[in-house]
Length: 257
Image 1 (cartoon, rainbow, N blue to C red):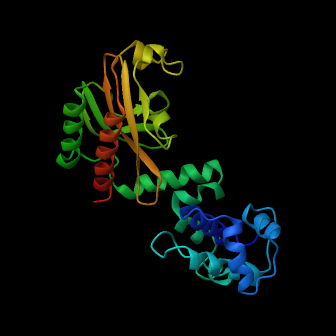
Image 2: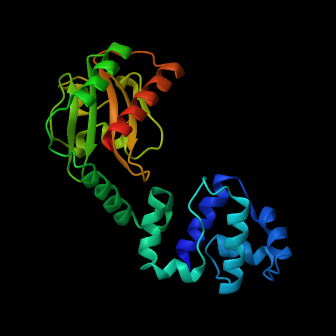
Image 3: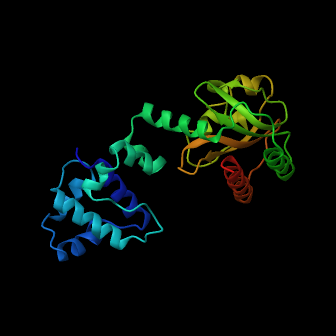
């Protein structure tokens, strides 16, 4: 399909301000567009192309209806390819364009984002240790960690508590957290079907409670986690989750400082 980055940016812009095909069709037709609503819908779902004039006119309409500050401007088809390739446009989308990528491409983009932090295998830093201390005190747990998770392991940028450095990624709870868009909360691992037989539950560090929040880079790729762990089950309220999210946001700022 031609114009995939243009289409992807158009979908992203429409989703940002909750536009649908009906919202843009009247404005598009008023500007001289000739494609039917059905053809526009097929273009947006990727099942058909539009002539260049029509897709460019549609891009103009979407740009008009979407605040400039809310998303990247949708380019004309010629501009879409002028600055290099569709790869350039896909990179500009960041994680918002993940649906254009294969699973392997998405993972490589995530690993590239980790590399850009320049934090793998670096020494402990007070700016991160301050966050884990705050998390441990706030939730009254034994353990708080900030992780970066590459293709093979879990690197602990900051750790309070008995957690193995460079644990194989496949063993870690956080490997599940990075596959989610929202926090992973396990109030009692003994009653969790996924984790109750985990070596980290049955053996050191005997995890009974886990709450982890994904950490994103500025392009939206999940690079690691902020999580708190304890050796006893416990409640975790919506207020607790909001506090964890706030600490995660602070951590994300530090990842790019």
